Image: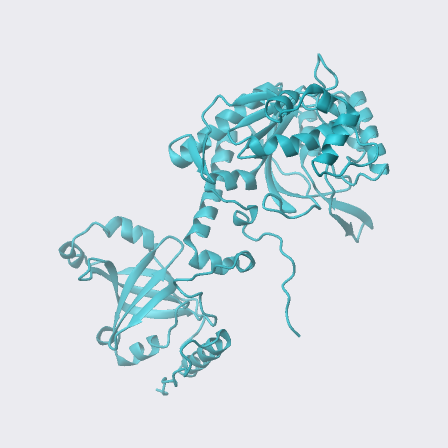
Length: 508
């Protein structure tokens, strides 16, 4: 067998490039000795969490009486060598366990090969269980084999991966060394599963609608554009699935939902990512009042299934999701929470002057409803920490919502706010094709005047309404923000596995 010894690095703290070079030298020596660096022949039979759950409470004597051999695989996360014996910790997708490796058990040659393994390598281990003198459950390796060679070092144990942008850009490392990051995405998966189960149990059908649309609709937002070469046509990544889901109501489905991605060509912030996940559901023969009660039930039951209680902590605030939640009209919120008088927000000149005074830009000819919305964003929204339903929004800013029967200047629409941010948007659906055409025409004029977020005219959707859509309620819930709330995450980037980032700057 060829000599596997290497000269030690002279530097106390070698640079990453030196470490990579050193590991490549080790890998070459292993290959030269017919040790595969990336074999795919080992089959694990147990998750580490299963081993711990079934054997973690057994005494030393009980462990010694076991005749079973355990076969596990995982990444080496720690390594302490004492000459003829070595302790390592390996981690799989469930948990971490200590492994005891002895030269006398493996044999001199195989132990010499094992000594060239590094922290970060993925290994397969077979052996029995015992407890060390300190009482730690440990796997005694009878066989250990390299499954995947790691050429880059993991971040140092006590400092971890701290740089925020590096954590988001190299999420694969973040998940390995930051337990909190892994917990967030496990929680996200569970949240989505619970929401799906809730809707399924309530008789809703999950559907899929186009991601690429010839006419983007369902929200006021600037879309991303793309091009289909074969058909030579401009397409848009969808900003919302709403208009397609409501076409399904016309087609006879009465309860539908979609849980998928939307794309909006907007800025990036702690609350915004251009690619994000939305849950949208539509319910025939229901209105916005029904949806408020439905949302209370859905999110409070989500809290109970996640935490066995309806109180959660978000950024040091105790938030109670137990129904009933506070309900205020849009104008009541401007007065009660925003501290405004009617003349402040109902007079267009006064509203415009106040918006400018508060530091917001005002476009020429901006409608009163948009000015009021800006006042709300500044003076009200940040103060809505406990769950608040804000309802009866101005028609000016609700192009797809049904007008209120008693006051056509407002719509039967609500938004849900928790922790100072919008979580959901819902309304009684507008199913009058003539009213919808007028709203689209208003939006077209705003687009022609320079509003990039105004709604497009959609003749096919109007045609669908002309066939008759049942009275209905519809709602959209931002999954990313909901996960932020339930995982106490301050930034949306913490809850998206691969958030949008600027291209990495490389030298040369």
